[in-house]
Figure 1 (cartoon, one colour):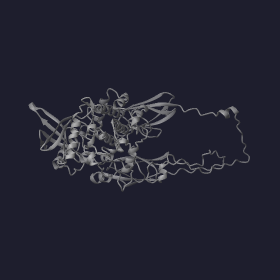
Figure 2 (tube, helix red, strand yellow):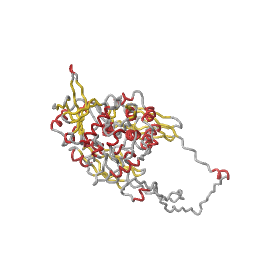
Figure 3 (cartoon, rainbow, N blue to C red):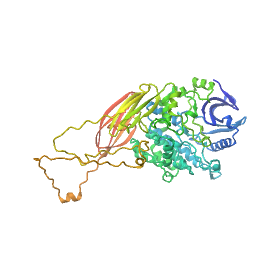
Figure 4 (cartoon, rainbow, N blue to C red):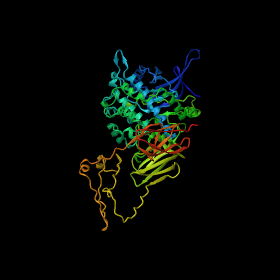
Length: 614
């Protein structure tokens, strides 16, 4: 294995390279056979002459060195070798949260609620420590400002660590930030940060709330937003769909905690990380870390860990920009990248060396994903533009794409449970030979198709025409609304709608003449008389009765109730109307599928338990 000597460190493998710095796995030696493996982040040579950047890098090291907490990546050393500055930091044996979420989607192993809550609880512990850090009795005023899945690391032992305080703002260093400069990743920024306003610790709570919302919902918060301008506008507003509506399986109290964390108005959020921690901890058990470790062992077995490839700037998440020449109905970049190619098959970038490529093919015995501070210079460099979706197919030899056309247009389309944005036609990129589950919905009607990537270049999704109504000579029983067409469903921000329609919160009803009814001449009409008391009081329908459904499946399952939206187990308290309901439970990873009928009783919880691990 080729290595490079760098001062007192031996650089073993480059695992990350950004625009201005690179990250290496390194090793240092001491007396009596002492060996320590760690991570080295050093400035690229061409930027060592940039005084502003070097100054920012030094400030980053000074800041990070002050933070020593179990939930924050620790800094061991800061120095220079031949004029090249570097930071030596803790090596975390495990993936970042972005990798976990992307792999879970690809393998259809949904992220359990336990993991999402555990990540939130542990990250809040680290943030509370950083937010309240003092020196000589004076608060440092640290705000991370870049909380995202890329900067939340999970160890295979179930630990959670926050990394990349590289663009954190310290009150004493406020002058280092140019006015109006927006730093960090747009999709995980608080609205006030996107607007370039002054931020405090509550901005970190909002960003972490977005991360938790996405983990629990199983989708991107702004996944339905197309262009960068639309994304910017949506992030500035900060208005999101209620988590309880998007993911009914999430307990309402937990959903309310997450929604409060990401409230658009900072004054409506928790006042501190400690306050949020007190609420979120109620949903975490004592063995949560062990459960997370077990899940990661199943999601990323030993062989997969050893195939880890190089993390480059191209692989790092940023602002998802839809291609200018394509509809916005594409899978998000992270998911498309994971489906297009395994990490080991990524073509080396210009920053890669043949030796590094050789080391990647040989594999690295220790599994490492370090999202470590690659975007430390994000503020100085601006937002990194994401790759275009089509470039993924060009770069990966085993990638393929398919075009989905809906007839009529206006359908809501989901691919493997991920809702696509924009309008027909949609373009989906993935791995050749992969089978996608495609569902197109027009109101109550839906069409389901299994589509193999690399097969047909275009797939038509056509709504079946409703059967014509049979003629009936009997008196019509049409209701007063019989001649009225249902409300149209508008897609917010759709480019196909006129500007006035986009501003309309509810589509206007279009009334048509009522269907005339004719009574046969010999038909008699019986008039039903009401007592004056009944007419005055006006009887109301009795309120609909509800009960609860709980579903527990080992190891896990997708659950659909009465053919509705798919949810993932465990489902602890799903509110359903009293009566009989049809459940469909499936786990594609182990090829299990079961249909069950359950009866919901008023005020009671009906539990369904399955064990597919035997």
